Amino acid sequence: MTSLTNEYYEPYYNVGDIRIFDVDAEDENYVWHMDHDNRRIKILEGDGWQFQWEGCLPWLLKPGMEFNIKKNEYHRLIKGVNDLKIQITSLDK
Image 1 (spheres, rainbow, N blue to C red):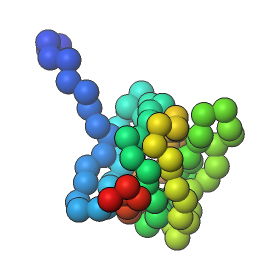
Image 2: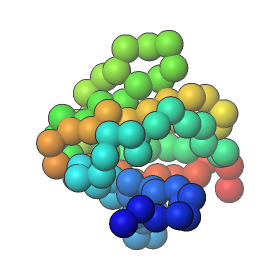
Image 3: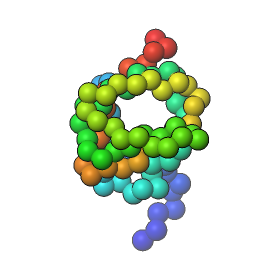
Image 4: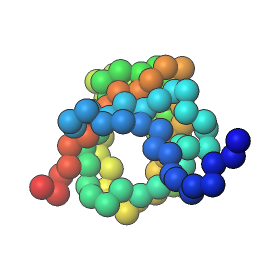
């Protein structure tokens, strides 16, 4: 049966400042997007995941890695082999 709703599926869930991305989510759920605030990202767990800025080649994410994402800059995730767990800290608060 086809759903008649036009709901947007988020391929992740949040637990406080921890976000867990679901490796079983369909690839089309990992889309180019912009964040509405400046963020600090720390990779906690996950294998084979990649991060890509608009106009750049993707790079491999590894546990312990930290980087900033500026608001209104396009970026995306490319799925790995298991769930990705990150810590997100807003730099605007």
